[in-house]
Image: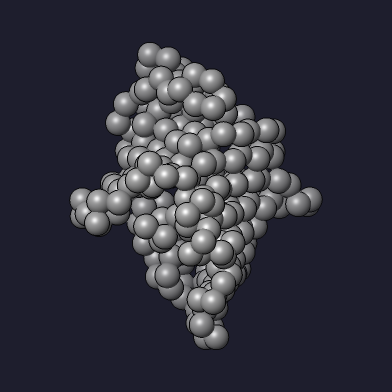
Length: 235
């Protein structure tokens, strides 16, 4: 359950959603309530902002709340720095930090001139080659938003994750009107396609908010379900 809490942190859709490339925001801030077993267990904040000279930073931070805060007092954060390569997101730096007694730090530096990434974790540093369109495991959410804005249905991303390259696949599965803390919102349902059905992840992405997920539901191997629901948004 905590694993997802941390990581949290083509064609025409038809009907409500026309086929055009929507402009992508220069910055935004969104907050979410995180629940499990009908209890509030945390709060998440996702934020995008320009850094100057064509670079951006994207942060996804989670804070334990309620009963969980009594057991896990650590703040956990993912930080990405990136820029555009043509119309694609090209990551430059990824950092993960988990505080507390079992703290952990991970850093991934992308060297596109050499076509490699440098991974640092547990006091060790190593390199590995990466394909040209590789993303980090934080900014893929932004890539998903951009591709939805282009009218795409199916998505496949190479992700530098855990010292190796993984393929994240997603597919459009429907449309849904969703009641949120920000009012009723029309959404596209996007599911992550996994080789095993032991875990399931579904995103409710809202055209109104540049296809930002306004709800995320993740089911773990033990059937624990984690839900993120948006409760604040600003640009």
